[in-house]
Image 1 (cartoon, rainbow, N blue to C red):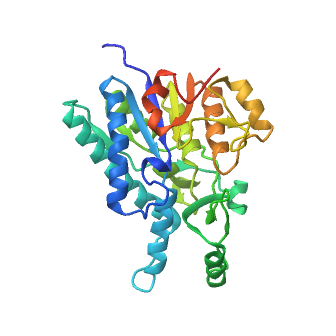
Image 2 (cartoon, rainbow, N blue to C red; image 1 turned 90 degrees about the vertical axis):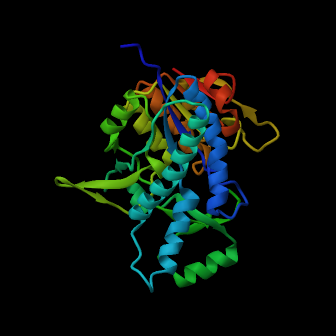
Length: 316
């Protein structure tokens, strides 16, 4: 049997599915995904074994709103089930777009979406301190109105861009379907998994049970990449890579850096907890757990990032 190529896990940022200032219609999201699929298909064409993880922050927020607005007609679903809904619909458009693009290139690879559960600790302190932004941005006036109607909600400012609802974001411990995903990857299938960070579940004796939370997709991508023995974890976002002093006149892109040095910057609090912080933590964890290379790069630079000539390249 010929030696198989390394596995690369791609963690797609929200800009791969929904651009800023877009309304979030199905057609908008589908067109964005088609553009992303073109880049991924090129990698698959080159022989890479690819697993795709995607975010769902805006989509799960919109799904929750739909359920709440329709509660007088049908019972609303809990947050973890809303996560499963978004995994299905986003997996569908990514899968279909990628299948179409590979078909155009006459590349015979199967593409499969795995609805994925991710184990968390029910005693994780994150459940007492909601921190994960979901849904649309609100003005201060809209926030105040919502809180008068729903005092149980937590709505805080998000990186100076407006106000968003916050939900618990526990640390991912294990990917329940990792063995099935590895079988598909070894069969040369392109797999979409851990969408939105996966459906958060806890163990209740011999049973799994969903819990109200949203897992950070970059940290979940690390858990998946580690558990299926991927060589590369590539985290794609809307900036060129990891900067020190981001947004200031003296900002500096860290293009090539060791895990130890990146960890020193992280311990100094150089990266925002709401944006770059989890991406850096995922990159560090992956290398600490045996991965070969972590990359944080702009989505548009995917090809060059894979080759090592764009983004922040992190190695041991």
